[in-house]
Amino acid sequence: YTESKGLDVWTRGQATLLNDTASFYAGAAPAQLIGVNDGTNDCILVTDGTALKKITTGGTSTTYTQTGTASTIYSLTTNGKQYFFVNGTHIHRGNLAGSTSDAEIYNVSSTTRATIRYVKQRLIAAIGNVIYELDANHGGGSLPAALYTHPNTSWVWSSIAEGPQAIYISGYDPNGTSSSVFKISLDTTTANSLGFPTLETPTVIIDMPEGERINDFDVYLGAYAILATNLGFRAGIAD
Image 1 (tube, rainbow, N blue to C red):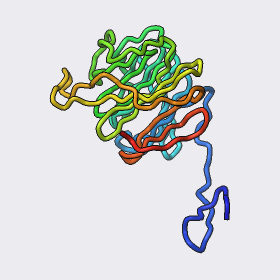
Image 2 (image 1 turned 60 degrees about the vertical axis):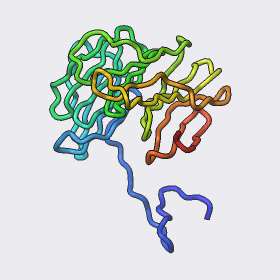
Image 3 (image 1 turned 90 degrees about the horizontal axis):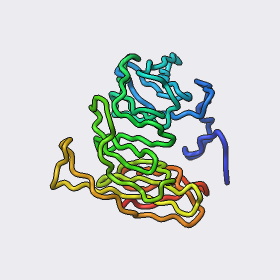
Image 4 (image 1 turned 120 degrees about the vertical axis):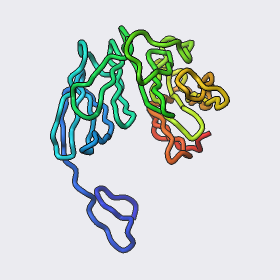
């Protein structure tokens, strides 16, 4: 035996077909997906250009009503009760339940690239080449002071993830000259204005070979670092 497709071969002495798949939504733009529960149903949140939609396991689709003028959604995350997304002008927050609670909580005018994630019970956004720690309950206005600004103004922050003891943020130079993972440790002796351990200055813990770009990074089971790059996958032990 060397390979298979569509088969479950992990039960000794038998081979069975895997569950079939079906298309549940076809959008006009590349989509971002996250699985959620809105308090009643298991759902998938999916972006479609400027729109944010919720699709239940029964196939019911609802489009969230957005405050302000809709623009391209660059990144999407959730804290389990609310969604947060970044578009070209604002960071938005809304309840997963219902569809009309959307609010603009930060101004991010003229944004063309961004990543946002809810990690370590806090909201982290990477906008342009700058990293911010945000207040998930903020009511509107300007971004706070930057946590870190990469010296390369073209730098792209590609992912934000959490491990047992730290937050990790990956990124790359679009010209292909460098790509790295930064580690943000937590100072548990000092609380910030939100009551969380203070985030320390990001430090580089992984540098990729020239020409290899990190497209995504995550920590699996709190122990394994998984990197998805333009050349394939890498796995290691999370620091």
